[in-house]
Length: 241
Picture 1: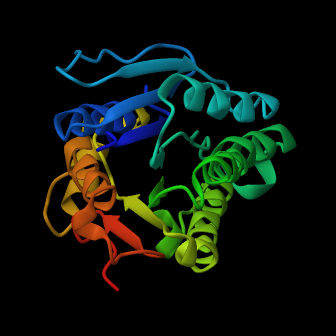
Picture 2: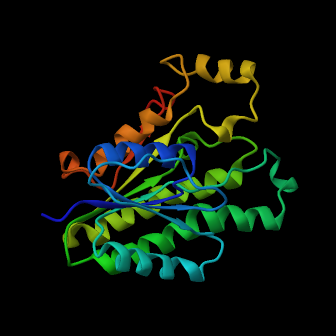
């Protein structure tokens, strides 16, 4: 039986690293990308881990990366896209063109390119699945982070369309939308601000990277074989629909 192999884009992020650790526990081989620093991952018995430096703003490198992974592993069946950049909080008239371009380039354009190359190399060969990491902000918006919210909202439309487009080709696509998660991305918040975020969350705490990794691993497993086209919030009840 071919060993399940996951490509994790943004594997050096707090969430990406936790997903890699959890998938290694589940017996996956892992190919992960980093931009500036490698994650600290312990080798697992009978599991292969390859790390690749990839700058998603260099769009021409994305196709080469996927072809290199195929050459190295000969097989992959799972794509987890958890790369992303945040927006400096600002009113819309203070957001520069450069920041708009960078947010869209990293958060959604590169996700589309990664999906395209992943599907190109897997479709009609074996079942596959894609998990995109979005954000709870796409549900209700986020004041002073409107461009970031727009990029994350685009993931839901991408997911639904791809689920319809690729379902008969045995490819599943879902979005995981974290709420307030205790990661380095939120280190700009004071402890009082973090406590306030926890207080407005029905479960009265911030989420952990483990909370997010568990649902991603579930969606990457056969246990979720009849789930596609969904955006699943991991937010402690912050968004109640």
